[in-house]
Length: 345
Ligand code: HEM
Image (cartoon, rainbow, N blue to C red):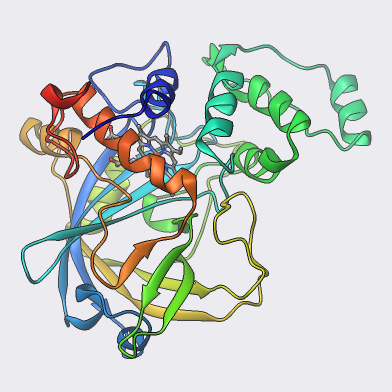
C-alpha cells in the first residue's frame, strides 16, 4: 500500500515523548475482549451487511485509553476507545472503531496535522484562579489543573488551538470535560464519521453509529480517584461471571446534515434505529500471550463490507493509510491493508 507523506507525517507527529514507537501512538494502553453481535429484527431493512442478516456474529474487541502515553493513567480525564472486529460468515472481517468523543477535532487531514502540531504535549503548569475566572467571563474554557504526577500535557496547546479555530472547539471542549468512566463497559462510544448503509431494498442512507452500554453511562468522581490502574481489572472481574451488553444505535442523516465533516453534530431529533446487541463474555487474560495478541492487533476503520461504505469524509479516508502505516511502524500483525513492517515506505 502507498502511504502519502501527509498520513505518515500525522502518525509520526502523534508519537508523544512518553510514548513508544513499538506501541500505538494513540490509544496506547488497552485490553482485549471477545463476544458476539446479534442484529435487531429491523436491522436488515437498513443494512444488508452480513452481520446485520446473520443471527449471531463473533466479535473481537479492544478497549483503550486515548492517550499516547505508555504509562497507564486510568483515572485521568481522557477519551476512551472501543474497536470492534466482526468475524463475518464468509470468513472475512469488518471493523467498527469508536471513541467516547462524539465529534472530531478537524474537518480535513491537513487540519488534523495542524491540530496535532499545536497540541504537542508541553510542560504542565497551574493557571491562577483569577485567570480562570477571567477566562470564564470571556467564554474561554479554563485549562484543567494538572494531576499530581503529570509532567506534560496536550491541554494548553489544544485549548489555544480551539480558541483560534472554531471548527475544533466542540471536540476540544468535550475532551477537556470528558472525565474517567467507572468501567470501559459504562461509557457510550461514537464512530464519529458518517457511513453509507444499503438496505435490503437497495436504498442508501447516510448514518452515524454509536454503542450505548446497557449498564448505563457512569463516570468516576474526580475528587475521589480510584487509582491509575482499575479499568482492566474491572473489565476482567465483570466478564469473569457475567456478560455485559451494548446496543448499536444508528442515527439517520437528512439533507443538509454534515455528511463529510465529523466536527459537526447532527440535530438530536434525527431518527435513530436500534441495529443490534453486542454481548461481551470474555476479557483478555492477564498473560503475556493475550497481552501480545491484542498489543499486535491492527484495526482499520476502512475495513468495511458490502452493505456499508465510507462517506466522502477525507479524515475517514486518510485513516485507512494512517492505521496501516502505524501498524507497520510498530511491527504489529499486519493491518488488513498493509504488508506489515516491510511495507512502510
Ligand atoms: C485523521 C484522523 C485520525 C488519525 C490520523 C488517527 C490515527 C490513529 C493511529 C495511528 C492509531 C494506531 C493504529 C495502530 O497502530 O494500529 C489509532 C488508533 C485508534 N484510533 Fe485513531 N486516528 C484518527 C481519528 C480517529 C477517530 C475519528 C476515532 C474515533 C472514531 C479514532 C479512534 C481510534 C481508536 C479507538 C484507536 C485504537 C484502536 C485499537 O484499539 O487498536 N481515531 N488512531
